[in-house]
Image (tube, rainbow over all chains, first blue to last red; front, side):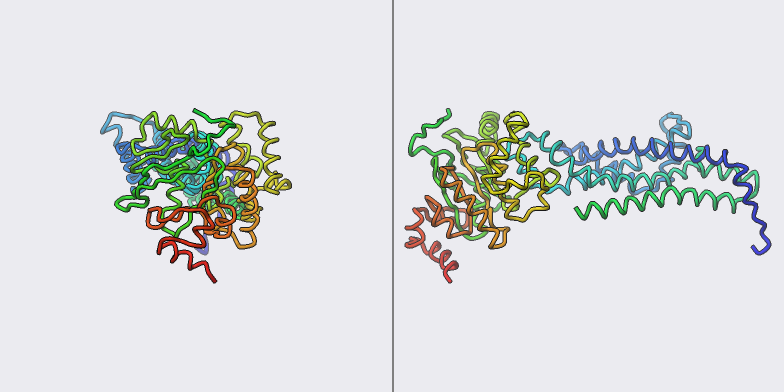
Length: 221
Length: 259
């Protein structure tokens, strides 16, 4: 290691190449978050359904997704779906779908926790005053639940940014993949992957810190 | 049929007819018959676990009876069948029945004013201006005129409960149910809530009050209902009940309050 000669100029020379990867990373994370927020709602509604069958489906999806590795899920969607069901997805779509489903299962839990954190008494008060179940949900439960779910949702976004690096394995050209490509052509993994780690950190850390401050401020209210 | 302004004396406003309630295999209420006439203040007392709160929750339509019925102005509004007709009847009288909870249950994301005007605007369908005007009058009545824009967390327990009373009154109910409205409060805060309840009774509000406040029951109640183990053990005028309880169970219960 002593006589290793750093070639940090590799980074500025290939900055555009790496930044297109970063753009992909952030786009994929943002799209995935939006899809997962909807998917999470579907799973949460299934979980809390009055009908046993729907509840079973919701719980089953959640348990399977939460208890298998995300990497295996991505490989399965990319390599197995075409073989098993003849569904061919390009790698970008496979990544977005895979991450969305994975995140949905966790976000469903976030929603459920948020809704269940609203004391039953608040709903009973609404019921006694004559508000309909819909009014009670939209006016009393949801505004309180949203406030509780926003920080965990943001935390999920941080997770997504990091997990999107797994796209590299199925050759999605996000920043990690770009790094692998660049490293293969320049033989400079040390500089490149250090730089990429710093980029991830500089995006994720401020987000995580703001969430922490946000949560602290909320708990004081 | 509504009886407006001209109450038929002796008619029950709200009543339970052989009302029973089971939770699983436990019978919490056993064939309760009780009624509240217009203008009456009926105080329900008894040891904890005697079913008082469940009885009140049945009247508030928060629990469905396992047997028997809950009636409002002689119309069934709750029974074991939960049939469409009963549910419809319940919906119609829903806002005639106000309830005050032990733990206030104010909505923490809304200000005091918003808590009070929510149901009038959305259920009674009055305009915001009217709802605000009514709320202002009610807040004056409960002595909290200066708290319009405060959030519930900024209020003491006693203040929160007075807001909760104002919120219930905003629906202009015909009967008010109080579920141990002062039990969660410190002694000095109990007083301010009891004063409001007493004033309400003096105005002629029909009230069904589950309480541990024997002073209130004796001085404000028009009738005492003593419950134990899911049954009404004894019933009577306050003076008679407190001075000469007839049953052993009532005597034993009242002895706790002597000091």
